[in-house]
Amino acid sequence: MINRRRFIQAASSLPVVGGIFSPRDVEASAKKRDFFKELNVRPFINAAGTYTFLTASLMKPEVVAAMEYASKQFVPLNDLQAAVGARLASLIGCDAAMVTSGAAAALTVGTAACITGKNLEFIKRLPDIAGMKNEVIMQKSHRYGYDHAVRNCGIRFVEVETADELEKAVNKNTAMMLFFNNKDLDGKINAEQFVALGKKHGIPTFNDAAADVPPTEHLSKYTKMGFDLVTFSGGKGLRGPQSAGLLLGRKELIEAACLNCSPNSDSIGRGMKVNKEEMIGMLVAVETYLQRDSAAEWREWESRIKFLADSVATVKGITPSTHIPPIANHVPHLKLTWDKSALNLSVEDVRKQLREGNPSIEITPSSPSTPEEMTIGVWMLQPGEDRIVARRLREIFKAA
Figure 1 (cartoon, rainbow, N blue to C red):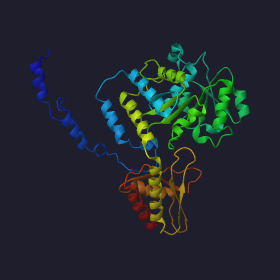
Figure 2: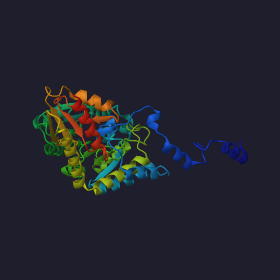
Figure 3: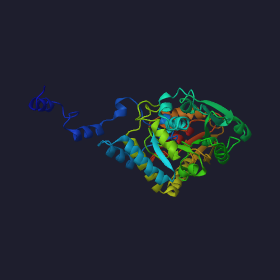
Figure 4: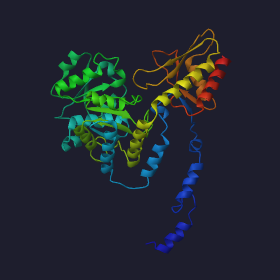
């Protein structure tokens, strides 16, 4: 056994940085390090938006401070989840809420809740759904890249296109009806009709609205509309932790979702861990989001659009315009098109030059339906970065 004197002697020989008795020195040292440079990973100016592969948004300082506060103490995790959930539900104006490890995790544990309820035997057996409800109804036009988060629970999708088809698809195996909010204008069954059909047949309805704040009112709109479950990403417009999300809805379903999630060991959501830092960070993110001046925020985005548009207006052949997506990412974007006979450049040429320049700049991914339009998202730009983006655009276009 190492006695106290030998332990202190051994500890005193440790270097200051990394030594167990010098947390302030360790913190100061960490702040001086350029970790991305050490790892040869290049940061960029985000003129794209809140895309996960681009690390979404930057957390508000209040969120970072809250997470640092939470990192220094121990608390019972289930108690904290319940308390944070109750506070979030009160702030947003819904029946119940929980913090998840992103919106995709919310899709998984929310689906699980609709299948298992609070039946502990069922919870332990997922994704083996023998003897359980195993079908999820979804509009064909709403199928998307996050289906897997729902299929993780062992279900199969039943595709429909019309309200009549949906009613005929409902049966004793129907566990849930899933709605992708961003495709509301594409489907033949709108959100209100979808909710009404769910209530008519006693089937829980789940709305994936991950990228649908702002505007602020969307946070409460869909639960008030009657959806039984709604999810939002925490790391997009809310500017909370990128590894967190919100699941809102009926109390009994939220309670069942919690049972299907970490820290419950034998559950399908055990790997979708949310710790105290993300829970507190998500709470503060929602608080600050609800307190912000949304009108001033919108004016700032419009000002950035105008500055960028004016900066390239002198380049012959370019046509700037403002584009506001109708639902998801509902903020002003700058759209640029140009006459190829005047400017021998493709959108991908410009993207490549922006990405490889100094500093590196990322713009919004091209849409397959409009490959000749270049879109710039201004809402994730930091103060002064619109000037840098404008300069680089002028340089690229004038050189062409």
